[in-house]
Image (cartoon, rainbow, N blue to C red; front, side):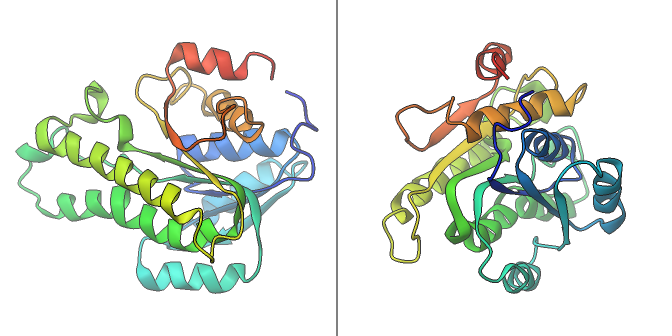
Length: 236
């Protein structure tokens, strides 16, 4: 990978201790970006940083799944701005199917991971994002076997994603959004490298930061299958 392709750019990756988030953070950093990684697990975040001491990686420990935690992150960031923001949270399916579990708490946890956390982080990070805001969530849940979601549950997640992107598009012209931000979503259904090689999949985010996925500068949902993965990362 070209280690200067993103030189001078600043990136923020939320959910960096997960497979996809970590892959995104490392790929962006190896392409030359200054990357801030965030999450709740201080030990895991600092391990990523220390294991990659040659890269420009900063750490912020934050529980942004709650209103108070998101507000604290907002205060911590101050007037810091980023060129690229990647928010990776969910899909979070602790059981094969939500409709067959007796543990009702999983509904609240799934809602928090796939809806509340994304909306809180959007509130904190969108005004600070100069170029591109990318979400990774359950937008591709419908028809993807590994999520175990069927019927209403699958459509609910997909519906949330569409509503969120519509809001992103509408808010681009509001006074508090001072930058021409492009919002995108990565639906990670059947993707090469999702669990086998997160950093390989992470190169997709480098391609997106370079604008390879979106020549018409529009918001939208991108489903990264094998063909799209190969197209986006071909020259990286």
